[in-house]
Length: 360
Ligand SMILES: NC(=O)c1ccc[n+]([C@@H]2O[C@H](COP(=O)([O-])OP(=O)(O)OC[C@H]3O[C@@H](n4cnc5c(N)ncnc54)[C@H](OP(=O)(O)O)[C@@H]3O)[C@@H](O)[C@H]2O)c1
Image (cartoon, rainbow, N blue to C red; front, top):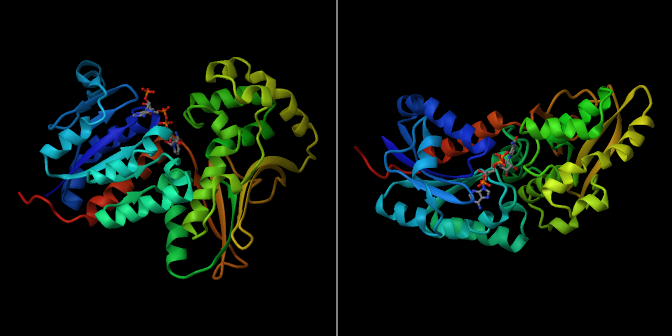
């Protein structure tokens, strides 16, 4: 039996759902793959818990009672005692934690992440992290960085690595903004009401401005652009920001209190639509011209993007083999369940490839 120790950072929407999914599928992983997954470390921004027995379904109570104030080395010290395969899972949106990935790798951790930030820091950081992973023979998986549980990153990576030239990737990159603009275009409802609903349902980033500013989609475009072999920086992306200037630097609480200020400009754009048109938030990656664009656009209701429902993500990939008929990937593009399942799939991918450390 391969023993895998999971150290989970982030116990919010995605992290808590991941714990539930791992515990529910424990027996399946053992019998089908010969893999024992044990969550031996939990951390939020303030506290940390380590347990060699692995957490159980009452982990919240256990965390509340036994977690201690975070020490920088808590996980490293614990992991060094037990010589098992260790996977750090990042289910936060923390920039600070992303900057610690090289240190995690130095301490022998494979890394699985839903957090896009590490892949969208400078190109130097990106390249250095990959060099280090190669040197340490450790894995880094991040399928959920784009399209939540949809297989976009792998698809682009596989096409690129097989020598296929990718020309463009267009689509609705954000399930959250997909949900927001599908509802806003169809229903007689204010923009701010839809954004608050999306936040409550766990569709948006913890701070919805990360979505509305276009930064979240821009990060996804950059992840794919780099996957397709381009060397680019975040500042190379042209981004339309839907947050009015006076709310851009407010605290999260102040922003949520005054979110109705966004209603008027968005209502104006909606009122200019023709009967057969809807608003869609689109990402466009033009690899030939190295051009990345994030913007709110008017599309025909009967176009592929115009027909999307709910929080569906939608990606059209144009490449040498898919020049006139794009490869299309479509489906739930946000949500805690699909994102946690995507993380779990990345964990299993690593668990299946690493050699057996301990035979029992
Ligand atoms: N929700 C989705 O549909 C979805 C889809 C695709 C990708 N994602 C990605 O998944 C990640 C998590 O999203 P979420 O919706 O689960 O967020 P969330 O509910 O706000 O949870 C965030 C968690 O991260 C913890 N945290 C923050 N900084 C930390 C740090 N430095 N060290 C350890 N823990 C830290 C927070 O702890 P405190 O409570 O102590 O602050 C909280 O437990 C994000 O990167 C997001 O982009 C989410």
